[in-house]
Length: 368
Image (cartoon, rainbow, N blue to C red):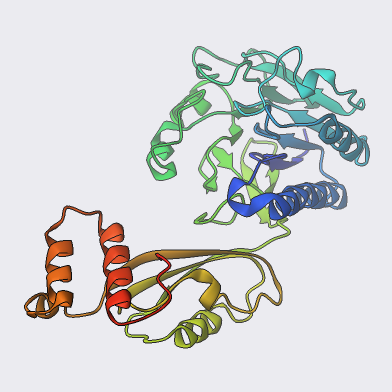
């Protein structure tokens, strides 16, 4: 058997709602995912791979449209006769009414439809074993009790959670179809091309590519389409190719000590200069409670930026409130009363800011 070349993807999440982006930008983000996937298929054709594998969460089951099915079928047909192997995950689970079942796929597409690993021969002596989630939850581990039943080189393609990696994904990531890395080799597989965990991981015997297009803020690691060259002894060589169409930036601006909104706007502009794509800006720091930090007052010039998300983060009052509280004045009594109240810190900041502005004669008493 000669070496086999595969382009591996997972966690594409077509038709994601992107509620954080708003209606217009949500649509732009969904188009960016399509553009990234098209770039990955163009890469597959250029690299003359033997197969493209997509290990689950290709789309969002509850939101997907038939237009997306037609897009995917057309995309797969564009690289024929390269095989496209689709292993449904928990977000795009396989069922009789699923997009997988109702789409008319070209001949080069194989959709795995059962919750057990089944074989597809890619070339003589090389078998891909894939499986599907058939519901949105409670899918057991595909490797539990599984052993290959033939010779040659074997690669798994499925959507599942490698247990040791779960803590870094956060508590919200459920262990759908869980497995231990050690099960890959004991099952007879040489490698597993997997999805579900969005943090990229090129482990010894499995590969998580990560979502190819950014889905949210705070993502780390090089998410990519992974070109996997499988040698005739089952060893792999991986090359990551970034296909994302959009950069996402999470910028925190410390405005401690700034005394007016023009200074805040300048600080924000300085830290976002030259950025493109989607930018989330959070202002933090110790400031005079009377400083107007409403986002519309410090919103930077959006030239070159596709979308701006503006937030007021952890702001703490910079006034010497203890000193003010000793004053035998209405202002002093007000501060004493607020500090004595059991208020959430952010609510306390807002109450102090609004009240002190009022006592200073500021006509703008909008709570912020």
